[in-house]
Length: 374
Image 1 (cartoon, rainbow, N blue to C red):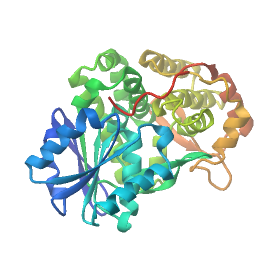
Image 2: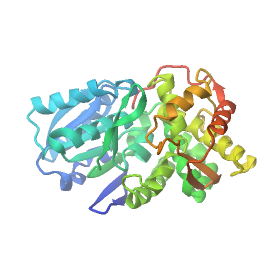
Image 3: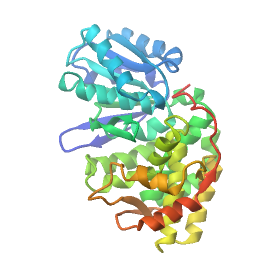
C-alpha cells in the first residue's frame, strides 16, 4: 500500500492506494465519529463490492446503512440526490454518521454533495472503484450534480476525511472505463509533469494490460500531482484551474451530446486536443508537440475528435455557462508545450470556434454509457 497526504490549511487527509483495501476497515476508524456509516453505491457496483466492503465494516464493529442508486451520469441530478437524503432521514442518520461513497465519479460527486448538505455537513469518505475516480474525482473535494444547461453546475467544495483506492476493483472495470481514466492520467503529464508524461509514453501498454505495479504507480503519481495543487489552491482561485485542461470543451461535449453518451474521460481526451489545437493557432505551441499529444491519446484509445453532431456555435454557447467564465470571458487552460500549461482568458471566440471545427467530426462513442464500474 502507498499513502500520500492532501495538506490543506485547516487539516490533512490521507489517500491510500493498493490492493485489498476494501477489506481494510481499520484504515477508516480514525475518521469515524461513531461506529455507524451510510454507504452510498450504485446498482452496478453493489453486486460486485458492497458485500465485501460491509463485511469488513461488520468485522470491525461498524454497522452500515446501504443506499443503492441507479447507475450513470444521466442520474446525477436532484431526484437521485434526494434519494440519499430520504434514506439518511429514514434511517435516522446523524450529523456524526459518516457517509461513504463506494463507486465511480458519479457516486462520489453525489455522495459528497449530500454529505456537504445533510445537517449542514457530515463526515465523508471516498472509496473510488474506477480508474478515473481514483486518479481525479475522489481527490480534492469537488462535489456536484448536473443541470440540463451545464455539467457539475450545482455543488460544493467538501473535502473527504479519507480516500481509499483499492486497485483490485480495476480488474472488473470495462475497457472503455479504463481508457476514460487514462485520459485524466495523461492530463497530469500535460499540465505540469513532463517526466510523468514521458513515463506514460514508455509504459502506456502496461497500463492497458492492467499490470498492477504500473497502475499503482500511475495512480500514485496522478494523486500526488493533484494533492500538491489542491493543497496550494483548495478552492480554485489560481493554480488549481490548471486541472481543467480540456474540461471546458469536454463539459460542452457531455452536455451537448446528452449526459452519459460520452464518458467524462472520453470528452476530456477530445477537449485536450481542442486545447492543443487552439494553443497552436495562437502561436503558443508547436505543431510537433500537438502531434505528440494526439499520438498518446490515440494509443490510449480515447477520442481525438469531438462529436460531429455539435457545431462550434453550440460549443461556444455551452462554454459561456462554464464555471470558469469570469467577467463574461471564457477562461481556458492552454499549453506552451507538454508539461507547461497556463490559464488564458484572451483567446478570441473566432479562434476558439476554428479550433473546435478542426477537431470535430468524430463518431465515437456512438453507444450508450458504460457502467460507472464493474
